[in-house]
Image (cartoon, rainbow, N blue to C red; front, top):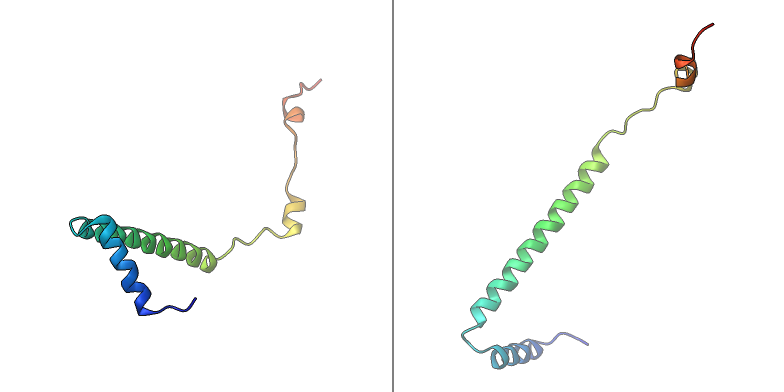
Length: 82
């Protein structure tokens, strides 16, 4: 369905009839607040994704250093020596 200015006028007339002229400023303010909150949320999400993508990933330890690391289990350390 193509957008036509007549559709916009028709929608505005229906809203005016349903809600009345006294509530239109209140409805406009509510729509404006909702749009502002949506824009703020999308901006925060975009910033988070961008900062996460630009952050340097931590480099893992080379495999040789991991293999050289001493490994002991708690049972060995706690076992009494005879």
